[in-house]
Length: 472
Ligand code: FAD
Figure 1: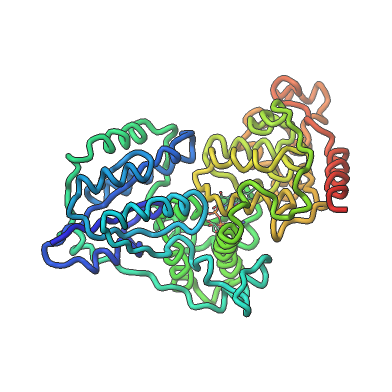
Figure 2: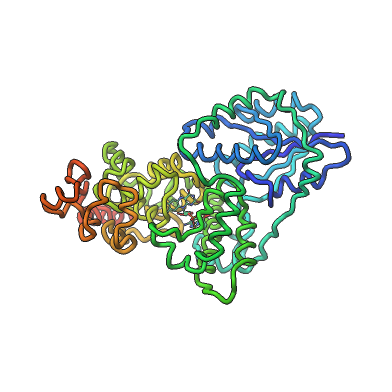
């Protein structure tokens, strides 16, 4: 008789969770199963929308999983104290982190497990393909997405794993009484959410996917660029928290889409799942990417340090409606459309010449779907400093983006109430309204909505010149 511990992390689900499924499979007669969540101080250093959404998912998981035990503190101390309490723990199971903070934390805590004689069982569960699974012929890792994707498509995808729920329930142990401090911390973090989140947890993820597979997926290739449309899967928040696994998403796409309908959308969607794995692999291969430009020649760009300019971008006060709508969407809802992410990241780094790291960190605070690998990848792409990035001379025009992807201004009007009555012909550039038109629209430029904070044409030229100097 012994206790097996399953350390739940960013895999907040019962279905298709490899570590949990394996732990349950290996339980013998009389063995106990203890579910554990470790609250690391680093995870809650800044408690903003990102952390709030994550901990609301922890809460939803807790409501369906049965007893979940919480420990709090730096990993080595917290786990030593845990094993002092659960003295019969012989095995610990978890889905390991291959990148970033999670990887470093895992490396620090493994010796504690060893020291206590606890057997460690780890699995790759967060990406569809682990970082070292998709390789070139010579075994090396890819730098560019297209060849990576070709190889990714050729590989068999790992199957969905099935949890024996009855067996799990029979073995689950409740020692919550021994972990009152951790429980208190958990309550502190979850009792008063910062906003009302409607889409949280495993059930919500499955339902959302069902809706997406029903129809929108067939038009995904076209609709995914229009922020006012509900044309994307919204899977990112669930994939990030682990409320759904990428295997489940992938296999459900294959099984539930109708081969007689349009396939362009389906193929385009699967390609994006591969993009998630690609950025995961890039970050694994380049752990320095969170802080360093991957294109070395673009290191040391003379970024603008003016905090007031950065604040205007953050607070949706740039005077470019498409950019401001996007920032308002993220600040209020914890999510931003992909097209808008590209536009605001380009605007910050090229038009304002503000360090991409600042933007990356701001997204970290606000995005419910924040994944370090994808976010760093997205930012380095936009700043033209990544492995497979937008060329430095291709600077997004914020007005053109608006005209192309939000033609009638529906997205702008949804997120910027001040512009709701602005006529369509001015919606992308409201400062061009005459004084009378401003009065009529109830939108006085400079009072209700700002004039553009920069001249895009000039800023574009300046950015290109700076990048060019760095390159040569
Ligand atoms: P869908 O369009 O339905 O795509 C399906 C899934 O594919 C997504 O859930 C996501 O897991 C994956 N995916 C799609 N596009 C990308 C991409 N470009 N890179 C990597 N994976 C992708 N995505 C995150 O999950 N977390 C982030 O922190 C993040 N930060 C970003 C920052 C910038 C500057 C940019 C340009 C993109 C970022 N993305 C990030 C990628 C993308 O914007 C989101 O994955 C997408 O908007 C999520 O919405 P969705 O689930 O409806 O996506």
